[in-house]
Amino acid sequence: MRPVRFTLGFLAAVALFSGATAQYCGAQLNMNVPATPKSYVLYAAEPQVVAANNRAILEIRFQIVSGYHINSHTPRSAFLIPTTLTLQPVTGVKPGSPEFPAGQLYSFAFDPADKLDVYARSFTVKLPVVATAGEHTIDATLKYQACDNASCYPPKTLPVKILFAAK
Image (cartoon, rainbow, N blue to C red; front, side):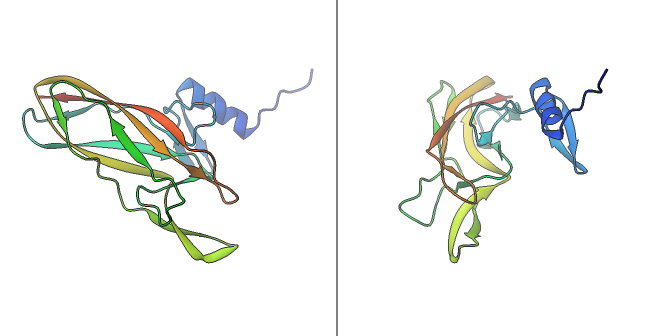
């Protein structure tokens, strides 16, 4: 009988779909984030608690798949598609405008003078809210354009559920 061999990629995929945590080159990878086919940005709802009837800030964390980056919310070219977060109205919640972090300047080896403003690895959007007491869910959509070192891909949308309790 021949021994069965598994590649690191296979084991990471198993960990990803089983909700486990994997080790890769000494770094711990959080595999609790469900991936969707051809998704470049991952999101998992993290329940938060804020003070009721007071201005509070919700943090919405996104993880970008290794090997890719996405345009920031303020790309440096009119030809690039900015990352946006669109919120659906919800009773009992008054959201403010999403506050995106500053992007990172990034250039390609073939054109080091042309710098792009991008998000890589992960980024957190802060959302100011005032909410009545109770459990709330804000449905939102993250729109982004992902690129690797060779090309950019068609824009994608990612459904986002922002869960929080106001007490």
